[in-house]
Length: 138
Image 1 (cartoon, rainbow, N blue to C red):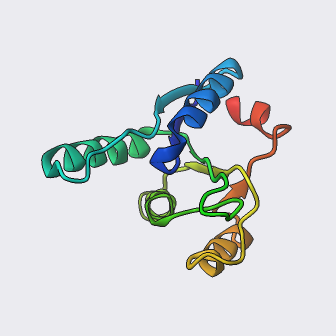
Image 2 (image 1 turned 135 degrees about the vertical axis):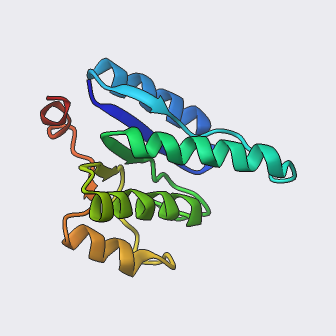
């Protein structure tokens, strides 16, 4: 069974839960979703990030849940961008084979839009396609 980590802005916790159930119904094991973190509790912040990135190193797929935020459809903020970059780094340096998918098209008005578009052209990240998911389960 393929292991999945869902990455998203913390405000999308409920949506991440819905996608967790959806992916599990397709045969995936969701091993991590976003967590609510108190930015004032440095110890908790570090612990949750350490655990999250450790799970990313164990997973077969990173699923970036890029929904509308701040009036931008397909928003990817700095944390999700960092998570995507981390997964790419694992693939490039340690020959991991982590599939990196995002839900909605990449907007062209983000600070990281150019880099994300380049990664897409290189095949490092791909947009989620429901028809592709069953093939990834194998």
